[in-house]
Length: 235
Image (tube, rainbow, N blue to C red; front, side, top):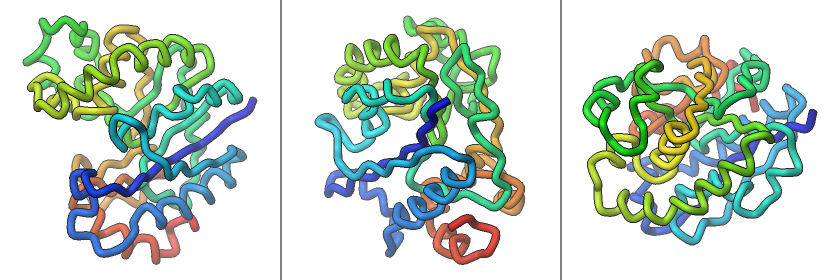
């Protein structure tokens, strides 16, 4: 079984000022920690530092659009604002082979508001929310249909994200909206345990050390440097 963990970060001026007043290159901390995590669980590792023609947020799709995802049986994307702890549970052990795997944020209100939308968002009702793309697992059986879907829809989702279309905005815009639209269309979500995407804007900060992968989203990036120097973080 050939497995890959990959990340990306492409610094560009129009990336929504992603640093958010953070005065350090947080993605470099993430690369060091997640690379060590991949080594610990026996997976290959790649860090992509190039952009995508539409926007940097679409870097998650590069393995599929360039075709080299097919070199692997399973691949896992981990966002560049995440750190791995020494509680090194293997994210691939939680794989549900019949679907795209991701942690579902508890956003049932969003699902209910748009239940009659043409993307079949009602499928997400049973999960109580929609996927956050901090950690996403893909298996080889879905590479081809997923690639066809993103090739067909990524420009449209990009334009709707830029235009602040309410439904696409509710799903998180850009890559996150595109992935959730795919899951709804294919009806193949495999929920991922929160310990693999412990989102600090959604979960208790004080409980983060029980997780395997901590997600320092938005303003929580300011905590990332402090945590990186903690012995409980892999590096």
